[in-house]
Length: 236
Image 1 (cartoon, helix red, strand yellow):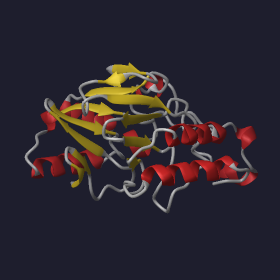
Image 2 (cartoon, one colour):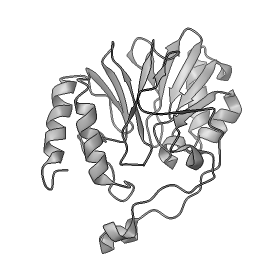
Image 3 (cartoon, helix red, strand yellow):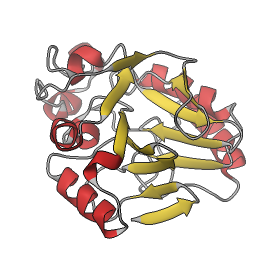
């Protein structure tokens, strides 16, 4: 585990997708779970710093893609943590609907070849469905749910205004500099661009991504500049 700021950590060595741990008075909250076998790495790293699986009280879901919740059902079974996710994504997380995909008509020939197959996730019960503006009062003194659709229809970000801390999932990827998410996995890129503009208005001091290292230096200015860039025709 690697400390980002006091009370906030990320897990190291995961193959794909970032997972964050928040320490609160009643235990831990995780944001996302990475791929299928990641729960074992997550629990091993937590045990190394003195935590037990039962210390995980909540798992927040940014969106229902396998690199973010492939390990959700397993981690839920091992910890009994409450799953909190978008009401829109709930049927997908619970295995009742396939993952939303970009319409074929919006893709080029090459894009159609790269379009992901029909995927139905192994279901995990969602104990709490949330919407834009809801406040998770037990997490970090009050974590605000921000609807940021586009990459998936019910994609969520989470905002802590006093700390100016933003968890933005896959609205922006940061693994090779800032960029938009994968076009073949993004249902509505125009909507995602609008979500970029929305989070740019938050004036975040620290931004934690679903892919890539957290952004600390000049975060607000950097996100605003990126939002202006992608708003231009052809901006990526």
